[in-house]
Length: 241
Image 1 (cartoon, rainbow, N blue to C red):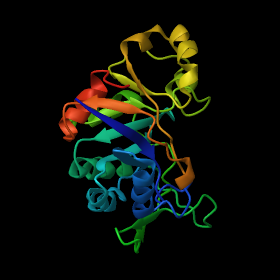
Image 2 (cartoon, rainbow, N blue to C red):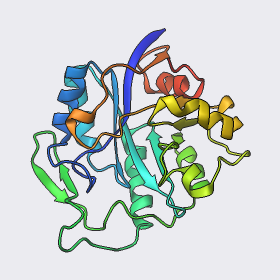
Image 3 (tube, rainbow, N blue to C red):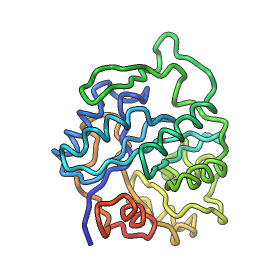
Image 4 (cartoon, rainbow, N blue to C red):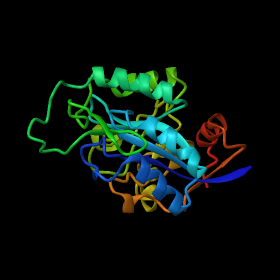
């Protein structure tokens, strides 16, 4: 078994709330400096900076995962890890079609920049990406699973935009197998209030919006290989260490 360090929730310059120097090139270089084996760019409601990630990651021996953080109709943030770049871009099309057509005409909320591997700006996304979509929580689960992806309620310990803050609890009939906790020290408190967490895998990511906030190599999974299928299996089978 391989011991692989990970950070699966990193925002690029495509997210309006992220720093503009959060280009895929800088993210990959910082991940290499920090000793990370697996990273995912997980922008708000878009995967359009993931192609550059995939072009760059191999140069540093880093395993890329295409992902996004989707805000559901209930305003629950959900991390969607996709098995391929193509499936992530297909999810991107679905999610973007379900976003309200609201533009940040004055740039108050920040730029939404698409860049290539050489940091050239190749486009901007017009509709504000951190808005809630019209996709319901359960519907999003089904869509992600239909692509073979992993659906993970994000930062469940936060007091806003989490499944617990929005619903008040984790539904006992939940179909997901993994949740994300920002502050792992809160897990005992969360589990006491939501016993279903005892049956789930728990990951912790940086949710980085700046390069300095990316995780060091402190969180690991045990996987049979570096293949995405084995990495996804490790996440789902509680091989988090």
